[in-house]
Image (cartoon, each protein chain N blue to C red):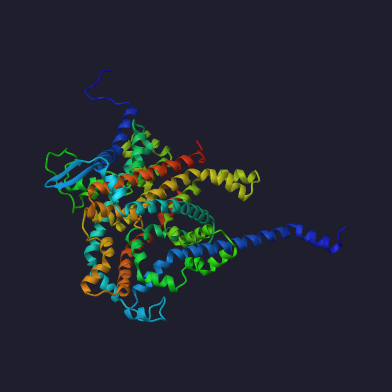
Length: 301
Length: 319
């Protein structure tokens, strides 16, 4: 039949149209408030940026901003390396701890609800300004010296002398002590990761566990043959999340340094160049992580 | 040949009863170990909070009193009074509350819409949109901070509005526009959460609605949305809490009349207003101020915690 003035869509066309409709806010937002600034950031990092009345002017200077950040700026390289190294060290501990906690919280026991509530508490408490205040807080420093904070008691003389007696190599000893010292930080940074792991554990079909019980597998075997393969995609997702999460952590020195450089220091161009380098570093790390882990990740489909 | 007694012991040991006892002891030991572990971790988490609570009620004399460690001897509300007046608490609280509510509600709406669109419809470029959502998470906000700042300062939608540009800094518009389009702080994560949640819902639900003659929009609003409460609550809580605690974007786009910013500057403000420097005393006031900031979030968490713990059971949160 010829068209009656109105175009008739097939069902799949109609569905596609509805799909665009639902995604439209994000597509528009992504183009204007993300992609465009992203391109501009690349441009800005290669230019000298000056604010003039009613706008700004750009003056092309090539890689001068990068050269300044890397070779002239006194602090940037140190802060940059420290932040990236800290991230590389902390992420594995966060993953191990949160996976372990999720396994604990997934078991049946009395007071499980209370334990879960407490374990997730850092999600709402220790993001943002509270965390920054803590490190400079007189009272918490005082109490951590005089009172027996859990980690301090462990990492104090008792642990050190115990490890000395074990005659461990010096580097290993230092590493163990530093890991123990960071326990509170790791615990407080793991809230969301625990949540994600727990959700993953609960999405494993119980039929798989029943099957392995019928086959006579031990708990240990079941863990390695069922739980680990099923959880491996979630481990990957969680590693990526933990890396991303460190961008917005108020304990991230580099973030503060970049902002201060852009708005109160050497200027917009250099600050943006630093941001671009941070992005490049993170992208490289993410690419390596994905490459290394994806060989091990087990996909059901 | 074994002696008769030995043989008896052997028999007892191998009996089912004995095996049962050994297993039982192992179980009990494990339960004790697990309990100790959970209590220890809970202590690490709760320690700073408890310490804040206790010191926020201490008087200045408790600071020099060596016998006072945890429980204040001279219980006082002065720190709270000081914090409220120095922070200008009513103003900054109201500002923070309004901003956080606007941002979290709008982010929730946009992430539900986009998440549903990505989960249930096939269209060209869908994987591109999905990749874009992941991309917004991978780029550090510091990289696009300067261009965004200048865009809000001279806002003309990249030349689309023929004007010299509006100054949107100091208004809520930057937050409204990014939240409503799903490009706010960590908004990509919420989109992924909602997409994952809708993908986990049975398709029969909508198909039944379609058979009854509902349009995709009706099916979405009448069938899918009412079933998405638990995931929506989680997204709302996260969005609210992150905005409530954020001082990065708030200082960048607005001013310092917001709770996290004012709290971050509290000891400096105190030093200026009281014309003295007394870090120990200031820390009591800062702790009282932190309690004032934590409390609303704790109350919200207590109310929504049920959904929070429940919804993970509904697999809403796997990346």
